[in-house]
Image 1: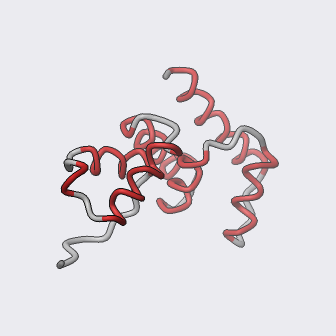
Image 2: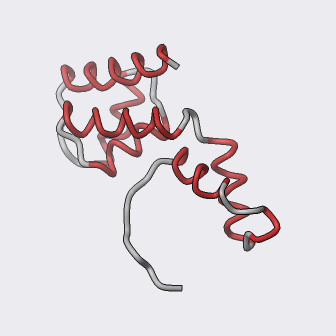
Image 3: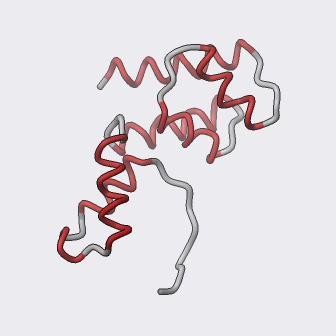
Length: 110
């Protein structure tokens, strides 16, 4: 199989892609992946993409960092710090609060 392009996408977006494939046509890894994303995707893919785009535009995050946050949907500064610690860059408390505001707004709207 040839790779056409590489792109970071959310669990919800993976779920949407796999839902287009009939289960009986999936290989074992695709079925495992579909089972996983069905259990852990927290929002519709359109909402995840909105969050990702807004986090990248408003909070100076890279797309892979924004996807990580959109997948987990942390609810506190402490949870957010657990992610940012792994990125080895300092995220100011004001920015963390802004991130939480974006997440909370999208959760409330959906």
